[in-house]
Image 1: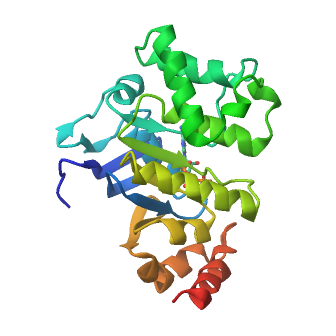
Image 2: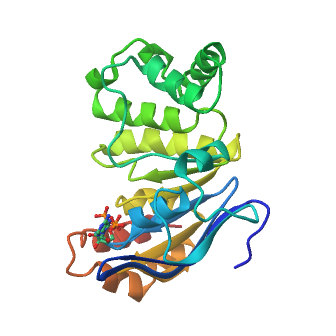
Image 3: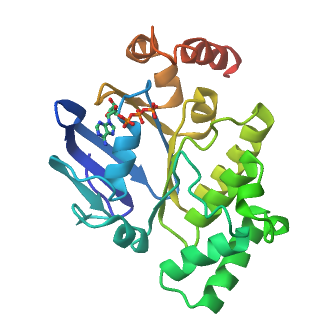
Length: 258
Ligand SMILES: Nc1ncnc2c1ncn2[C@@H]1O[C@H](COP(=O)(O)OP(=O)(O)OP(=O)(O)O)[C@@H](O)[C@H]1O
């Protein structure tokens, strides 16, 4: 895999926590304008890889490259200014502040004046269709709106890459459907490279052109949705895990696939 002009790449990355190898020689690329999937059973190393790609986790070996530039060791807030944004499994909103202030604070943190940050917050809320939530205190939001606001914060100031860590967790089918539309728009019009980490396998198979599968810190499969559906290694990885509901999910999607 080569690092192109339009890629965020982890190359041969290893991360060790004391005795435990969380990632072993992992290579993965996120490409501008595409939605890339990352799946794997609990504890496979998905969040650790997101942390590596966003500057929250140092690597023991390997490199991280942003559009050809080595960015190993660059702090998370600096990488964010370079256009690498993420969401967290926990929303991480300022719960006592209104939604618009949550976005504004992010804009100011990224170097905008207050006035420009408010204008950018309004643009993002409008784009996401959440302008009606501007004055709502973040801590009072229903869970799914909280997730949308977290995505709003992440797409302030036009990032080039967006890493979504389990954005559909706890969502109903209908809510996941709405989320899918948002993710498609993010990769489409602004041409953001999206990495989607999800246990909702149907969502990943629907949205992603290329899917990486992690198991015990190693990439065990990379391919199109069809290749992932037909992979014995993927089924085997999920067997007997807390996520073995993924196996029938793979079969169910296969049954309706053209
Ligand atoms: N800071 C840390 N210190 C020690 N061990 C850690 C740390 N972070 C993660 N781990 C361990 O590394 C492994 C990978 O964890 P990680 O959270 O990346 O997996 P995951 O695939 O995101 O899991 P999940 O689907 O449950 O969120 C796990 O065994 C986890 O316990």
